[in-house]
Image 1: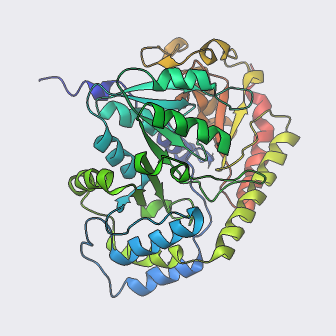
Image 2: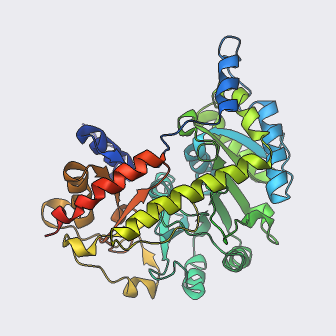
Image 3: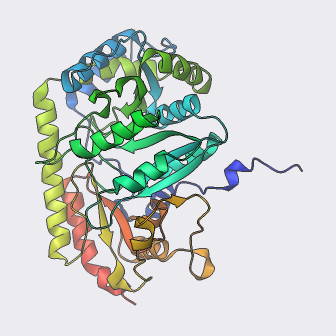
Length: 414
């Protein structure tokens, strides 16, 4: 038979979702894939129950139900001060995953390049490749997750670069980009006439004293920023798959066409129910931040008590834990890669059998300790094999049980 698509040979399946399957197979607590085990807001599920017998049950307008887009426009104005036209500058997608893919496809031509910060959410690299573009990686400092502005400019100035992807707050690192950092990115985007495609699904999960800034609000950025987000994290409804894109009309016209032929539209009854959540007042978001701050403190204090080293999250709900002490692989020095950008041609060194040390650690931890994590190597372009990602969007009892099980980590030491 004729060979299949070459571009789909370049990347693997999702390591995150693979770890969920491993967790399910061995009964491990799933701290790998980032979804909560607590219920969505009662007002939201109650509204869904009201809609179930009466609908809407047929296709909504392709670009999203009118009342949903209007409510989203109001919410965005409230938090960012920017008013997006619900008719011309908003499209509702099947999750932020589709939002990002539709945005990439609307911006990139085969042969273009896209700048990604490393570590990065694994979808970004795959999305870039699926568009026929090439990722260019700019590493964050392993010490404080800052970036070298000169290295970033070298990447953004490369011939063929079309866009930069910005995840803020960041998955997997938990970094919240400062206003100063965003200003640097914005000035370079304007200087080199690049688009900035943002993933801001964790915009409401930020820990004091850090604050979230929408890069689209900075000078010269509205017309070149494509904001992708979703309701999944803010309202604990990851299975509803309601995402959206916000962008200026000329860009949105392209995104609407891609979205139309990619998925047609998001689920009509779920959009109708979710209008309730988009109309929540400030008390909901204050409660959300307090809840996640509590979960973060519970979990990170527990990790600290266990003597584990980890990055302190500034936002989102992930922790990168250092597993160097367990002897699965050497701590790879990131100093060389931090001196310059990494290109897509760099190969990842795997250990015997084709499994990276942190991958094997995660498999062993799920099977023998009963807690599932994601190997950090799936997020880095640099040869990093000493980190794993855990998430803490769980009930107190789940986190306590996970911490109790992690006390058995010593059995994994080699």
